[in-house]
Amino acid sequence: MPSTREESILFGTMICFGMVLVMTVYNLLLNGLFGEIPVGEMFVEGIIGFVIALLLDLFIVGPVAKKVAFMLPYDKSKKIYVILAISFCMVVGMVLFMSLYGLATAYLENGLSSAIITDYLSIVVKNFIVAFPIQQLLIMGPVVRYVFINFVKGKKFMRVSS
Image (cartoon, rainbow, N blue to C red; front, side):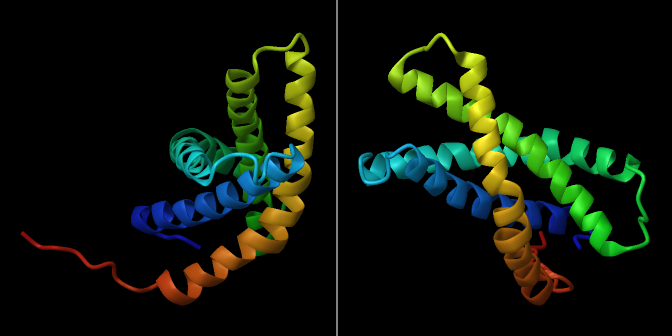
């Protein structure tokens, strides 16, 4: 897939944007908040969530997930196995971190409850159920890979020379 640092950042940004968008809508629907929160507030929270997710993806989860994925015992000569291993590791890392972010924002709005660990584990399970199979394998992963391969890969990015 991405073969340069520039392509890697663009690919990560595309995946991250799509995942944050769909997972935000999913979580709003899941919690009965879709339509209850003003559009402006949803937009601002979506931007903040995207920035946090992108930073996590680029600097923490992405690098660790790739290292872990290549340490796993599977046939790395088959591209589909590499994609699945990296996707799985990325989703696990992002779900763990972004569920913590979701829990923190919920507590900031509603106050603390006594069941923080139970709440966190519940959020993780609900997010993972959607993030990996539906999002990464069936929707966002294939769509972004298609767009990236057909419209980005191999094309030179415009550079301004000084």
